[in-house]
Image 1 (cartoon, protein in one colour):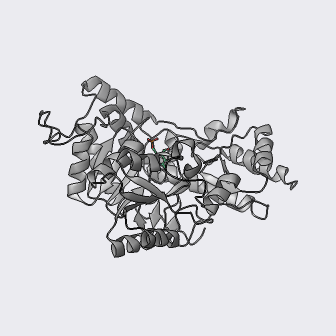
Image 2: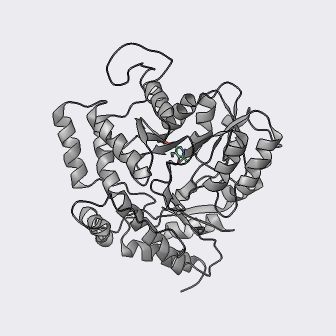
Image 3: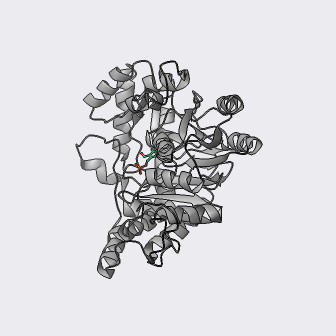
Length: 404
Ligand SMILES: Cc1ncc(COP(=O)(O)O)c(C=O)c1O
């Protein structure tokens, strides 16, 4: 933990003060001290500022695409250290549009993780490509660069890599970028779970050819539904902007020249208004997640569970706090008895999903992903947790293992 990269970039602190004081003023963790409701696995919450800004957009009448969306794109890209941002209707459409803009064609193989939300691989298929699964590192749950290298060397149809920054921890981008360089592959980061995560001081969203984010309500920041592609490549930004807007030649002009096939994957101005306020709060929201994780790491040490890894020079933003153990169902039942919600992300690895029968065979061997799928359990780590909630979680886990 202590080797983690500090989040030195404070440009998104609120005008009103420090990141942590903002978090307190907008969403006090002590709000929950009086409640007897279960400790939920996610608790999306919008500040009064967000509600005001959404109201202004409502009153303006400019509800669909427009200047609010352009501002959100600029601000989010700047936060990530990328040159361009293109807003999309959700994370899946961000991934699909990015792969279309990168020119994936029928039969092209793209290497991704089998241990992710299904959208990571679905986007490859939607673009006409074939997902090829590289097994994960059992410590970090992100794709193992040695496995990637092995697959790239063995096959001659691989055109790109789509690593997933799972649970808020970035994949091993330095190694993956080296492999991509050596074999002339594109890289699309699936950063849908890692807004603000870092590798060696650099935020996710600026590595490779494109990166894709989701703003679903359970994510580290939300717009209800929403997504974003960030990139340092102008051609990719232009391609994504065309694809999400019916292949229009002149994006944003309202013209009807359609130079290529596209979709309506646009974000609304209402969502962008929410996104802009959430982005301002993201550093403090992530900090609250990290504080919750630090308490769990300390209080759960020594129990027969594996707590999350944060490798040196990585900054984990704890979209999930995921432990693994041999008695997951029993632990989840004890936590439920104590009023603590848990969740399993993901019980079935993608290559074992019925929808993937045509892609992977029974012989597909990805043991690390399968073992992870059989043993992971996520505990509540969201920024709305009160001190009492954390204590409830910690006591429940200790109680399960008969430690008082
Ligand atoms: C890793 C990952 N990729 C892609 C997505 C898709 O995002 P969305 O639900 O916004 O379409 C998600 C969302 O859960 C995700 O967790």
